[in-house]
Amino acid sequence: MHSFAELVDHCNAFTLDALRQANERALDGLQTSAATPLVKALQMVQLQKAISAVGMFSLFEAMLQDGLECSDGFREAVEILEHEGETALKVVLRKLKEEDGPSVRLKIGPFFRQRFRTGCQ
Image (tube, rainbow, N blue to C red; front, top):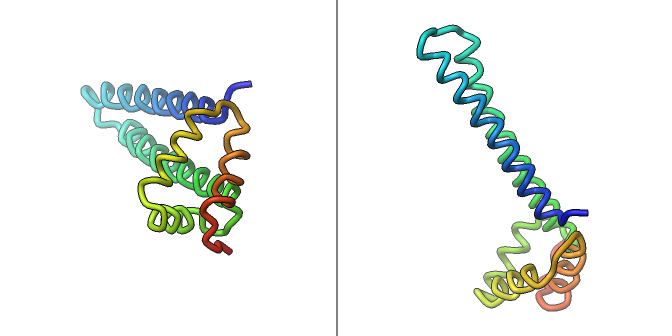
């Protein structure tokens, strides 16, 4: 089983490559024709990129909420970083580098709760 981070990376690369190819095909077609489907294809590529970005952002927010056991993961992360400063970020990055596999999220959450508890609801 691949680590979650590795799967996310591969998924993102796959999606972006497919969108790049679709974009190139539409642009190539527009060199000789101004057909509406080609213009729509370019619009769809841009929309799909936005949807993917929002989805990744939402997924990361959900992981923060789960790991920090709170309803606003980004707010909690900001509070932790403001309270602990750069040290907290270095600790998290070190922990992530040390770990591999799907257990990372399960280990980071308790680590944060023990060390940086700030009362997230």
